Amino acid sequence: MCMHGDSVKTALSSAVACRLVAATMVFLLFTPRSAYAQDPPQYGWREVWAGADASSNVWPFYSGGTVAPFFHMFDDGLRLRFAGGYGGYTYEGYRREGHKAEFASFKGRISFTDVLVGYLKRFGPLTAKGFVGASAIGHGITPLDPSNPVQGLDYGPKLVLELWLNMGSDAWQSVDLNWTSAHQAYAGRVRTGYRVLDQVSVGVEARVDGNALDKDARGGAFVRYEWQGGEISIAGGVAGQFFEDAMSMTTPYATATWLMQY
Image (tube, rainbow, N blue to C red; front, side, top):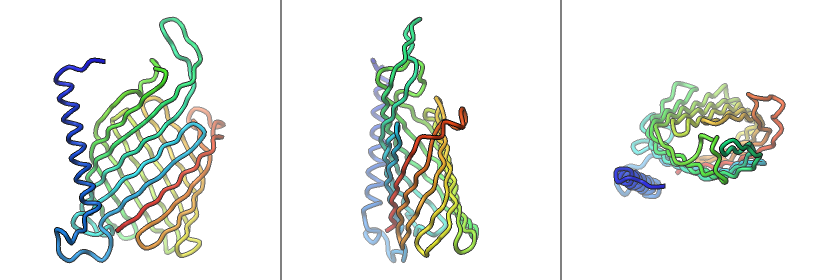
């Protein structure tokens, strides 16, 4: 594939911009605030996380970081976020070439990068975080699938909304929503948990993921262990193309995530 001069310049400019943003986030995540500010807060003002997901045909892993440059993580205020991930997936379908069509197995690779700015606001028992920024998502399919619109690199604006509601001293609910014009990707997850111990919650979850090609649904249960400044969560259940065939919810999945504030 050939690229014209303007395309090359745009690609180089985008790459340089991404590297500058990544370097800035690394500096903020790993430099003590005392190096450039007085009176550091009692609580952490940086947050990092990592996670992995596995099912019979999908295996992504991801990581990221959030910085509260002027406050700690529990204060209202500005947030800066950088995230990225990589994974693989497989699917089957008819591969068409001209007037011929043959059933084939496809292997895909996905990578993504998000750069976001947002704000946290607390309303009593409800904590709300909203982010806006840019996302770049790349899909590589082998062999080439002419009927799949989700291939190659695409980028565009991204919107994120995260809500956490404390329902009394023991129960809680979280809602995470995001959308980007890059390959028209979106995701939503709802969790309802109950603290069976001071630091241990159990509950149920439901999730939807989609893009310009298709959408999948998940339903399962999770266990969450939290401590001052961090948490670990493990979830599992079944997944499938629920919106096309409810009986397809038979594929097992498992996820694990780790988060730390400092």
